Length: 317
Length: 291
Picture 1 (cartoon, chains in turn cyan, purple):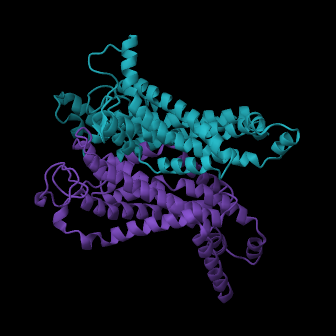
Picture 2 (cartoon, one colour):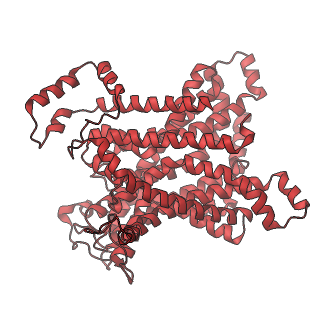
Picture 3 (tube, helix red, strand yellow):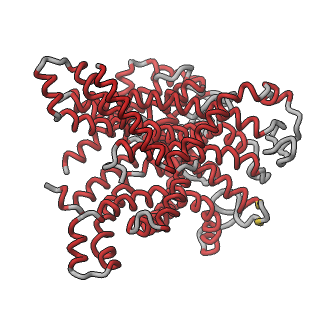
């Protein structure tokens, strides 16, 4: 268990190093980019330039002392980058949390039905659908949902807002405000659920098919248990374990969806912030976002590995 | 040499025969053939003027009509022609990035499986690092540093997508390393390079090929995503870049579905086709893995 934590730390250390040195390779004058279009104190610029002229190793040590330095400003928004990230965390957690929860429930249900009778009618239909969903760029699905259900096309009237997290002027602290947020959540959340559930259904299906070959299921049947009971009591709980682990492990894939779908729906979370940062490009902001996403994914991976050890006695030895 | 060449030919024929019986795999091949033909014929069939903004003769955001079967874009160009040209760019980027990814993945995988000790640990460590780091943030950071161009896009996708292949190839290499013929060749004094290139590589190669087709599918999706975010060459209208332009020119709020729907359908068809072919190949090459 200790070795897993250590490995996560080493991975993290490499992220920090990579994050520092990669951006030192950038061509052009970072100070010029930083000061462009702003009324910057010339003395402060000289100070910044002197900091950048120091030896690379010295700069690296300064950086290592505090990678989450609260005085680092975004070049585009002239505000501390970590403060901006802090503000944007909650909309993303709301969107991704809802989407992952719904997608795993629906995906696992589809996976169970398909995997219990592989080759059957439900399996053929659901595998076909999930493969198509799996081949879809998530932002394209989002754009199509926007055109059909928000702008209105093919005879369907627009029912949902075109973007944002709430209508302007609505107070989101009361119940009416929550409903307003929920109304804005429907389309981006549906997009992500459809994309994620394809992955989860495929994994659950494969895992259940693997489990079907196990001898304890033959024993359960030999005891005279009905097919439904064999499935519910014996096969599914065991097949669920690798699936749940994989849901945690797929957070990297979840992040991709968040960036593009938040962009399409102007959902004011970390994904949209990433898009705004790369359109600049706003290097300090981009650096901080990369560090933040990497940490989130590394921690999720660690949790998945530790959970696996807790729940599966077979890997403990 | 002759014997092994003959045996290889026999294996190829057997593979082709099993593949032809796989219905979903053949569907994939047919879809791919149509797209590849479009990509090759695009420069012959499409006049340069059709892509030139200054020579566009259609109206802005016109719906599908007889002269513009898929309507027009924000500067009056035919979307059908842009789409056909995009096939060329999307497929080129997809295939080139896949080649980089497969070469890296195979080299890392075989070396990590063959060598022992610190070197192997380091290779596995690098592979794991690339597997853990979220793909899109890493790709965005790399693409920003390198600057937007088609070549850089290919490099970025190649660098970020090889780790899965490496892990698969390493596992296969480890199982081959234990076989008697490798022990025999070691006893006869074969060097590391000889063992890896003559014994391990030919044995993992079928798996590499099956994995390649699956990788192309993922790589094309990655290309679409990165181009949509504006990290590709703005002058090269790949499918992703088309969707980016549709998005930033306001096609969505105008309800111009004919601008958004076709590029996505193309991506889905090509990715699905590669996935179907890859899964069919995997079923034949490695029936145990593909349950």
